[in-house]
Length: 308
Length: 295
Image (cartoon, rainbow over all chains, first blue to last red; front, top):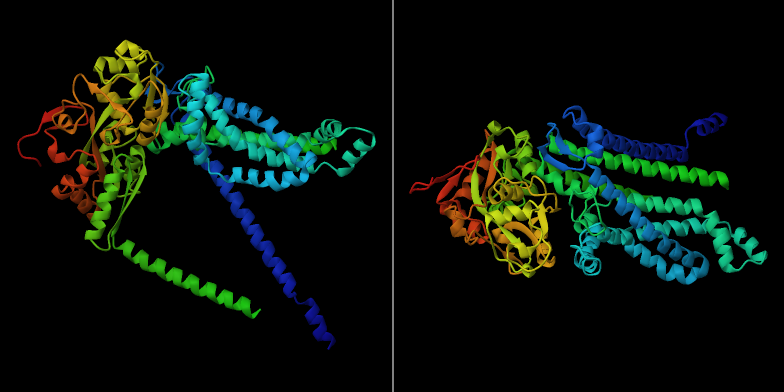
């Protein structure tokens, strides 16, 4: 009898088995994702770096060159693969759209969490979720048929350019930034507000001096997140920015971004040729930039956590 | 508990059925009854339509057609990843392609015409004026006989077959200045139609009444003028295969080149039939008259 009981106790129970199975499955899933991420990074890097190692393009020339004509070689016998126009185009639309989106996003978030939490959650939440769900090609098409002509008639030029790209990206990153700002504001402890109100602060003073200050790291993360999304967006921007590999000299002159050149060019090049490798190098620049955005988000998060 | 078992059983049966089905289809694939054609989006509609036709006449065969661009088509067929590579350009015009490893099959001709926005007030240009516009020496339509309006140049993406052909035969090997680029002909037409002062170029089949086609040196962009080369901006549509193509790929290309398809589908879709051409042109751009009987 005793022996039997001992056996039963020493035997792995059904629950323990199940737990082990669950652990293995989740570990396998994690491994799969990690391997995929590293495979992508290694693949893009090997392809992108071959521009410099096997085609012997100078890295500095590549990053600072102003002419993008991979089919043509310049006077020095080097192919014209300068990506400065694309990098600057990408950065300008990203930063401008973030600057434009931030006040709207923070305002909406404040309304939803502080001023009218009930109505905000009931009406604005679904609206924002809806905005997230709209596919980017739809944004691009609306941009092409509405935003571009509007920009043309108000600001002049052909309408295609950084300004049109900024407007489209503004709408696209708005929901991301808003919903993350809402989370940041909601995570501010209730007693902060109560203490401020008890000291006689008005609602505005509470929001401005206490809640917003406490939520700053979270909001910064939200903005950087939105910028990362804007930086990587390809289709919608490509439809409205004009895709001219020129250094942007005004907001209404056609420009290009890293992603727009990638999507328009990749089908017309041959695997392993310089033209193709140069596009992979663009992809590598894009990947590195998004890694940097990720790092920045982590950094802000850590700093915010320390000051609390 | 009992219910769970049932679900598990059902899943297992489903998996077995799926596996069996996959095995069946694999058998068919193994018999070389499927070929894949990849490449030029300009040629894609023709190959797709011809492929469907072919498959209905030859049961059990399947022609899988994908876009991706001329460069993709040529490189994939060179690597042996696909059976047919569709391209708007000669393989020797595409960098990174080893011409010796590929076999050229021309299946149609496409004429390319400059198009402008209707508000420019221009409907004819000379080659010289065209070159000046695309190299940035002329900025206003008034300088070439149109209204006082800024010229907006719209290009296809670098390396696109249409752009290569246009720069070679329309601009006499002059390179267009850096300007807006779009990656499809449909998009180009849409933008030219809506942007005042814009100019670009598309295949004849894309021209409609929303845009103004250009008379070049007094010659109308028509199929007849392409046939005798008096309209110089045209290109062959090629279907490239490896040196030892699959039997089905060979048969399919023969089918596309046959009189039946050339006279019906090719014309209906806005291409120019090979049989109508009174001249031939090689990869170097040398033009020759065709002798009375066609190959």
